[in-house]
Image 1 (tube, rainbow, N blue to C red):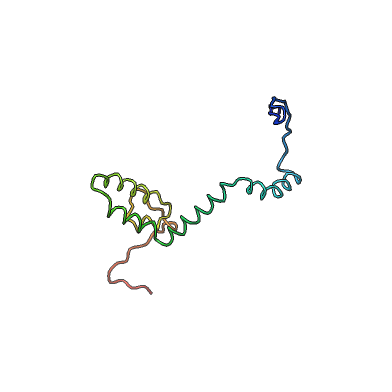
Image 2 (cartoon, rainbow, N blue to C red):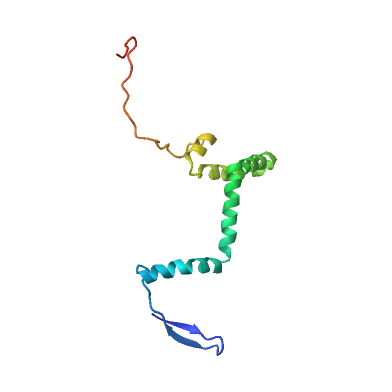
Length: 130
């Protein structure tokens, strides 16, 4: 593959060629594993994103997010209440966990059975099992 590169010393475009390397060979797998950490360390925003995701997960697990939503709804002005409720409802209904949806009373998603449905024979009054 040919592409243009700007030479920083001369500020002129020079043509260069790059060869594709297969990642499905022993050499390619070794390249992926040895270059994994330097590649992630070179992308500085990734550390901030991971820390933010862990922080939001801890806050969600501790119930801080729900408490903040309740406080926001309680102190919001009357004119903004409709918009806030739409935002809060969208956030609550977009949670993937079925237990959260059951606890919050969200009815937009159809419940998924936790196990296959089994047919039960109805009991007749007065009958006893042997």
